[in-house]
Image (cartoon, rainbow, N blue to C red; front, side, top):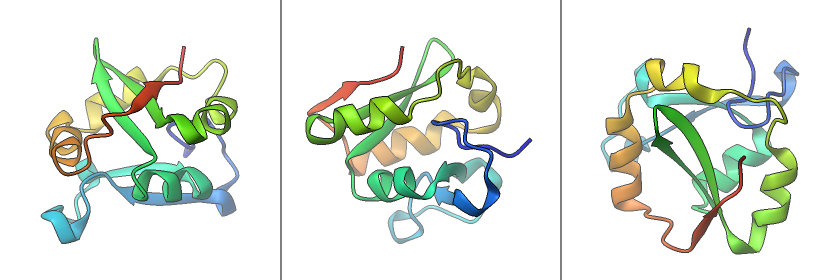
Length: 110
């Protein structure tokens, strides 16, 4: 089932494949460097207003304080993102955090 990794949205017309590490920063076109996101969340991710981290083998969602409530309302209620950490190598997330650390980000998922 194809769905947004954050919101659990399954409407295919709303989904986009996002590079975890942008190609301009050394990311490559491999599945391990891609994550499926709802279009609005993809834009926030690319703008550095949303970040993802692996904690305790689960993908966690963080956002800039300015969009915290928006992102929190988008997070899937029963979303279990643990399955993503198997497909998404944390090395790509770590590389992204190195170029876009999200220092002022707060955790928005449960």
